[in-house]
Length: 238
Ligand code: ADP
Ligand code: MG
Image 1 (cartoon, rainbow, N blue to C red):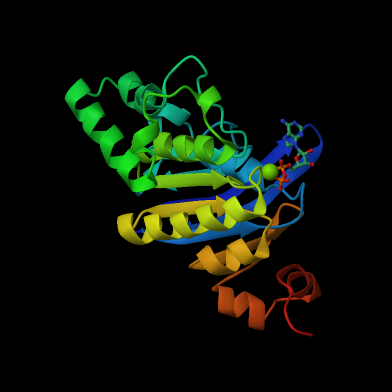
Image 2 (cartoon, rainbow, N blue to C red):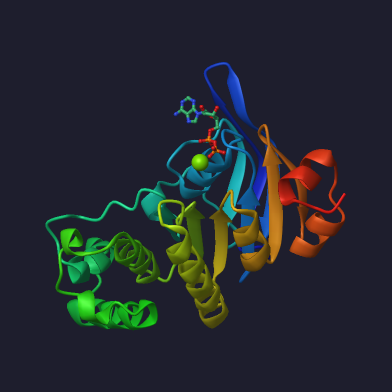
């Protein structure tokens, strides 16, 4: 059974078909990277998986259950997006625990979860600070901590590092990789950074114009690109 299955999903905005019959099955524990040019539908697909946008047609299954018509809160997922809005009036600790509090998780358990992710992300010393007292990279870690505290079946990351400078991006990339290896979670991760894709992915899905052009291991898409577009996009040797 797949952790996440997207079946014939279509999405239209007005007259524009942004997702054209997308089907994709993601294994439990798999790190799937979604790449493609700006405007090809990556975020729309992520929002559909998260339940933030209803699909026009098709089905989404998580852990074998049809969640197509469930709200985001009813889906066992956590998201980290590019604009990592933290609550400015809350401390780091409160920000990380917020989702758990909403779900009425008891305080002792919340505290434990906060300690666990803070340790994992090396932000233990920042727990009593407010977001305004943090650097961009630290804020991004807190946003990630908030998602990790939940231990959902699936993580969705939509260009989580694109607001960070190059040095931090490389650092965070390494950390995300370690996290995945340690936790063995299922991740769908959008990036337009080919190096990020090549280093993080178990498989890469290359999107263009609402379609998935190719799906394969980094080695397959790099060395055996389906067409010129994929070759160009992945920087494959001519
Ligand atoms: P990507 O994340 O790959 O850059 P998006 O999924 O954000 O692309 O957008 C895909 C296309 O859908 C774009 O042409 C965008 O303008 C359009 N789009 C996205 N969201 C909406 C919306 N809420 N209403 C209308 N058009 C949208
Ligand atoms: Mg996007």
